[in-house]
Image (cartoon, rainbow, N blue to C red; front, top):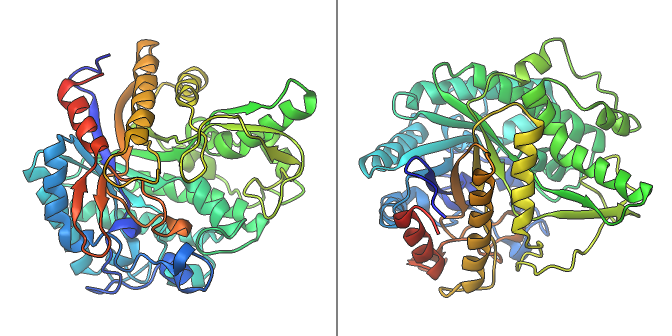
Length: 439
C-alpha cells in the first residue's frame, strides 16, 4: 500500500497539553487553568502548568520530528499567550515564541500547521459569558487576524477550530471539560458561535489555506428497530451533521433543529450567519478515534448529546484502548467514504488518529491500532476519496484534559519528572512508514 509522494505525514499536539510555562512571558489564565484549579475536576489534581515543557524544549522536540521524517507538525496557538485578555493588547513575547517555533520547523523542512483554537479560551472572555455569547465569535476573528498578520508570511495552512463539538458540549453541557458548565441551552448557542467564529476567522485570513477540524465518528444502530434507528439518527445529527452541514452546506439539518426544539429555539442564528459559517474552505480536518453503537434507552448523568436523553451507548464487543474507547478501523473507512459521498468535494486530512495504552516504550498495541487505521486510509484513497494527509495523535505524551497524566497517547514517551523524551516502538514504526511512503 503506497500513498504517493504528495501525501503529507505529520503528527499533532495542542498548546495546553504540552507547552507548560503557564504564567511566563505575559500569559494569563485560560479556562483550563481555572478548571484545573478547581478540586475534583481533573484526575489526580493534575494541571497543564508544566506539562511536557515544550515552551522551553521545542528545539529538542523539532529535532525529534525531523528524526521521524515528519512532513508537517500540527500544533495549536494559545490564545491567552498572544492576547491574554482575549481582546485588545497583543503580547509580543507570546507571538515571538510561535515565530521561533515556526522558523525552527521550516529550518528543519517541516511544514507548520497551526490551529488557532484548541480549547484554551482566555478566562476574561469566559467571565463575559464565553462561547454562548456572540461577542466571543467576534473576538476570535480579531485574534485570528492578528496571528495571521504575524505568521502568515511563513505559514500557509491554518486550522481555525479543533473539535468544536467538545468545546460546546463537554464544556457547557456535561461540565466534564472547561469551563465546567452544565447548561444544555448554552451549549447549543456555544456550538453556533464557535462555528460563526470559524467562518469569520476564515474570512479574516485572505490568501491562506484554511480548514476546520471536526471530531467525527461512524454511528450505527444496535438493531434494525425503529427506536434504535432513530437513536442513531439523533446521535449522528448531534455528533456529525450539526457541524458538517453548516460548514459545508450552509444549513443546519432540519431534523436536528427539531430534536433540539425542547431545549432551545435557533433564534440566535442571525442573518448571514450561515453564509459566514460556510466560508470557502481549502480542506476539512477529520479527527477519528472510535466508532459509536447506540440504541434506545436512558442516558445516565449529564449527556453531551443534548436532546437525546433516551439514547443509550452500547458495547460493540470490540477491543478497547486504556481510555475505554472501542477500536474499529473500519469505522474510519466508512466515515471517509460517507464524507466523499454526501458532501461537496473537498480535500480531506486525518488530523488526529491515535490511541492511549498503558505502555512505556514497547507499545505493540499502538502500532496495531495505527497500522489498521492507516490501512483504512489507503483503502479509502483506492476508492477515490480525496485524502491528502495523516497526522498521528500525538507526538508526545501529554496532559490529557480531565484524565490528567493518566493516559498516554504519544509516539514519544515523556518522563514527567525529568522531561526526558524517548522514542517508543510506535515512533520507529511510523518513521519507517514515512520513509517507505506506505505499508
